[in-house]
Length: 282
Image 1 (cartoon, one colour):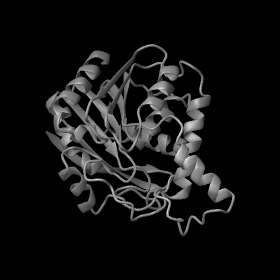
Image 2: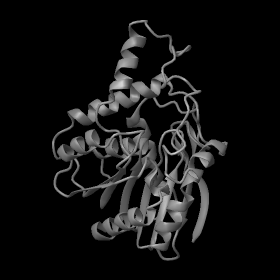
Image 3: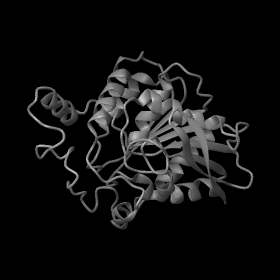
Image 4: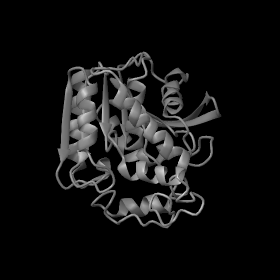
């Protein structure tokens, strides 16, 4: 496996990215990571993909990892989607290979928004995992309380979305509980409260997906989710995508798996589904 890091220009300056590749890749994944995460935590994902004959390019989204921006603050998912797609223009990016867009958790919202913005994706397919694409009642109610002056976002009022001390259950990410400890020990991960601008941007993007035309996503889509994911529910996301995907929509929910499906105990099964889909659409 070959690998390296690089930067490319965005509205904020130099965006950081990592890439991994088989010696002669047959296709490339452009990957968007989740909230609080960064590209460096996808080494296992990349090693599996490259062993299957592909390449992975993953930017640190704005406010995350080594990319610029206030930590974990996103004011527009349209902007983030444009910056994510901008990696395709980096000199290192293999533009001659079939392309698959993939996003996990918050990254799934990024690629879903990218696919409904009316831009040319140049992609053979999309892989969406661990997403929250339907409504988010807890965030809706929180922002309504802030707007009514009932909660001071700088204080938090004990709300779990605003409290940086909210504990992550040991098995919330994976039944392999070492994954949670790796996240906590990683100095580049963000472990604080949700910034209010990010919550507002999240709900705006969700409404945009709700208002998008039926069949707006022309590419084949694979949706994957852990059946026992305590962080994000899957039903709302599947319902939203069922309207958005024009034709080829494959759904896989893995019983027992938690949120970080690519780090789960049954990850070999999950990666087999992923690679088979990519080979089919490319």
